[in-house]
Length: 211
Image 1 (cartoon, rainbow, N blue to C red):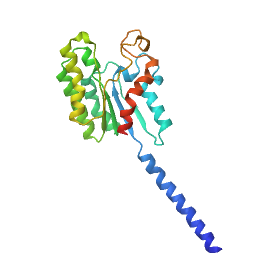
Image 2: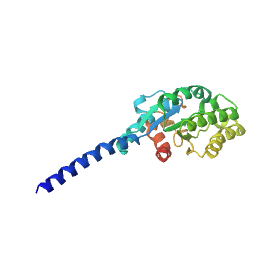
Image 3: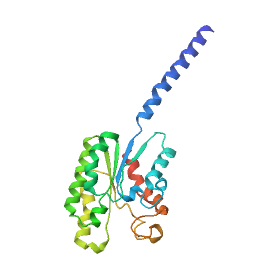
Image 4: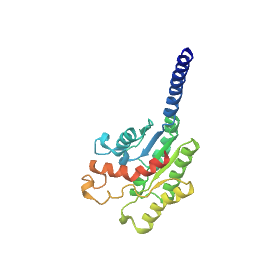
């Protein structure tokens, strides 16, 4: 009887130790996700809490046993050059496991040379990878009135970078939103609150793949 009691005590102690050891390991596997984007991710013109980035955090909290952290470093009006200048400090500060790169739209709307946009995207991808971050690239398109040659070169930047660096590519982040006035704000440039869940759904499979 005494031996049985001692065995039960040992088993209980062992189970407790296993729990204490395994719990931190599970939390250690959680990822920090850095969102580096422009107004589409910064929540321009809407309640930021209802933006797709915050919806991503809520989704991960509900669906994943791991305590992933989403850090939104997006700035309305941001360009690839501006984000590139900010990125080293962000990587040092947050040490993200995954970086969601949603940029280039403002460059395109300003008519920046596609090759210049590509160089900036490439430098950001390189910086992130050198710091141990996986990168998910968000593909963008611009209105056709910029001319066929320019719009094609602009869009190809994302395909070229995703293939060169073997990155998950969201083909077109605004798929199903752009051109739908019911999902756009009055300026017909920025998505409204109704569109945010659709934006999340467009990106979510690629984000989950990176996690």
